[in-house]
Image: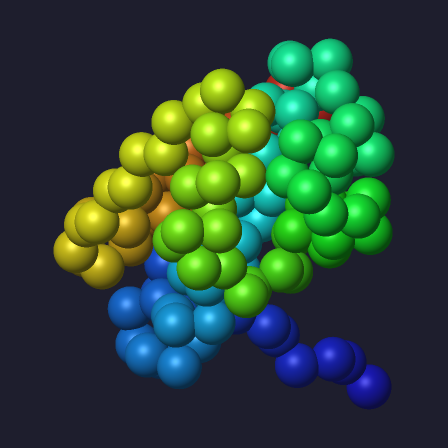
Length: 123
């Protein structure tokens, strides 16, 4: 008995499934915000408790907002957080088509790397 094949092409799913696209972009953005906040906090050589003190909050609140799946941002809250870290916020708004093209390029580059590796292995 064989398993059904699974289409893992992100670009194709983004193109054809608006609900998947909405969830995917939200998750992608949330994870990027978390990575950026953690990197900036570490650049400033602060731990979560020290940053919490600057923001007049508790360490668990900092931990929560540094999670990749945190989605309760207000722009004002994000601005205050970033200002406490002496940073800036940049927002990029772009058409879905551009994002899909980026994923297609990544998938094509990955496919090329895979085929090069398998060809080298067969030699």
